[in-house]
Image 1 (cartoon, rainbow, N blue to C red):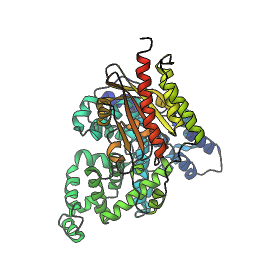
Image 2: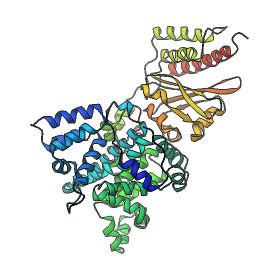
Image 3: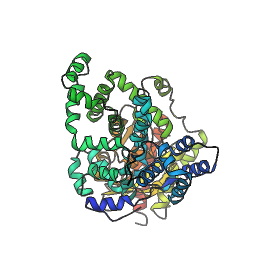
Image 4: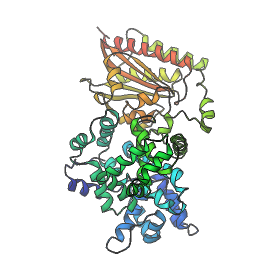
Length: 506
């Protein structure tokens, strides 16, 4: 979806307030069937809707806007919202929402919704069991906190991706980047939409804390860092009863869960992540190590429930140290290519090395290159070509990836890893020990295509200039060393093929 870029808060609100977010076809069909089934309770229907955050938001918005002129409080749960709307109006609303295949939803929107689902899982695992009577407020508030940004990711996905690259990966000041990209502070825009849509009160509490009451967070964090001495922590809180009361508010669970989910996207050991872990451990009165174990477990559970092809879930960067460690260690390298596959690979390489070049055009050459990489055991392959200005990389060939990936472009200047690879021919191999370090420096949309710890990136040159980047893996698990060697040799063959193609007929 493409729209002109507003530059004022009022213009953004007008645009985003009119957006109807798309619902994945499978979720749409499942919910439509449940609504038509008289045996289904409202709880059943709410459970079916959970797979589509966009549908949850649409129902909550509709129900709360219907009661905006009364004294009725906004619905705090999806079940209450469904009860207020009734089945007929819910069916009418469902019919108005775009029903599309997941591949037709912008990756930036799907990624943000995945983060929201991860936040809801963190909230359920860390807080809901301890406050059982409030589990619905905890769950739905945590899921919907980032929902105002979903509409932004639908109308302007490129802005969200650039914000992530510049603010999260490169560490540029958020205020300056947001002024350049949106013309307004992002948090202020989100709060304005949350108020307009009458989202649950705990969502508004979280935005108010970030925008107006950050002093509470700063004071609490100062105490939270003293995690080694629990008694001293408690005494410090006792000395500040107002601060203790503020910290103990159940509504803070929404902010803590989303802080953990957002920070983990950048990495598990970053200062930003550690701060949210300190805050949460103080809130739960739990040792930091215990809290980290719980957070990692919830991330792994979220990945099992919500991970999608082409999206990045931070659990993939965990070396899971508890019950998951046995499974992680049991991951064996991919099997080496079969003798038959190696015969095919050698034939493909021979075609690449033939002189004079037999290729009619660049597409013909890169198709042969992709097939050679697949023959040597690579399960997911992406061949990217640099444009004439050496500023952008565009997809030339892909294998084992969603067709929608063919439309991706990557700005080299936005990624230090891409800059390094495109400055001179090089090869980078990602594995469990360095994945988190390098993944944070790759474009989010590229990182999301290759789920798992293990990845190969190789840049290739022609006439002294890097012109192509090859990205490949064997499903994300450990590589077969035979395939790694064949990958390197294939890269050499592609470089020679490029040279022969450039000088054909010369």
